[in-house]
Image (cartoon, rainbow, N blue to C red; front, side, top):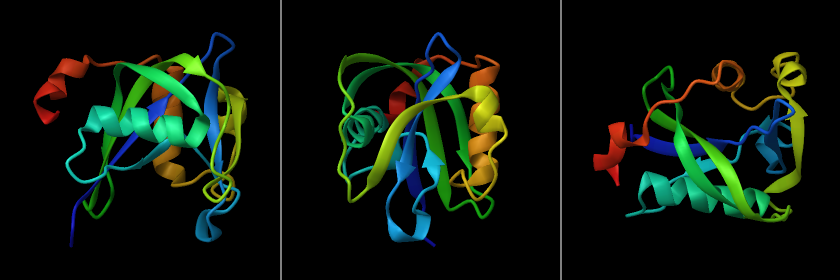
Length: 145
């Protein structure tokens, strides 16, 4: 089984909302997720997180810290989720991949179900970490550039 690295960003505003994307691909259509995706070949985790955010939301971001690192249950997917801040841009996305981009309150996200959130257990863990303002220095994975 090939291992996959997924990178994503959690962008939280001062209203305690997280910027979420609504997926449009057939098998996950309508589910909410943070901006995230697989790394391109020879791409750093940092560049990948920034690229995925731009592609899925239209925003340029600065990676501030690591929010969490997760492994899928079967250990085939490693997720590295960053806390990030918007530095420029406006909402824009490829409608073949994303249906909508919007701010959703942490309280509303915590009440969503597996029929609303992509990778439910993983997403609930990410939301909880964001609610608790968890952050770890980026330099703990600096050698993964």
